[in-house]
Image (cartoon, rainbow, N blue to C red):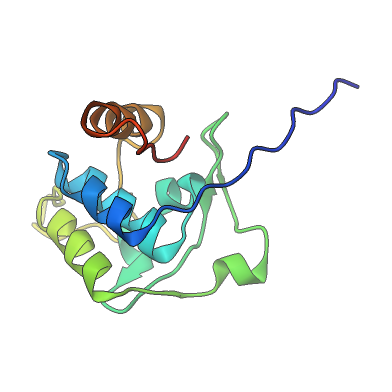
Length: 143
């Protein structure tokens, strides 16, 4: 069996660093994804799995995660990870701004099972990292 690579130390961003990332010239979808990671503690696969019905004004329900390798949706691994996550006012503003730009179904209504973040993953990480490196090389989000 091959050796597993060593675990990397996790870095927690300060509030100042997070707010600096949110001031970068990023689109509202990217800023909302950063907010989900920073203010709700969601990981990349959980953010990718969010659907419109998972977000209410005061909470996010993590009902699925999307596997980074095969793109398949999976249920949360533990009951704790499936518990509702409170939405603080800053995150609510970010999510509501993103929701206002989302495309609607043929009847003009948002589809409850539509993903909140359509193009999430490598492209989003690349975009965030490029902006962060160009403005401050110490800021890197999501890998």
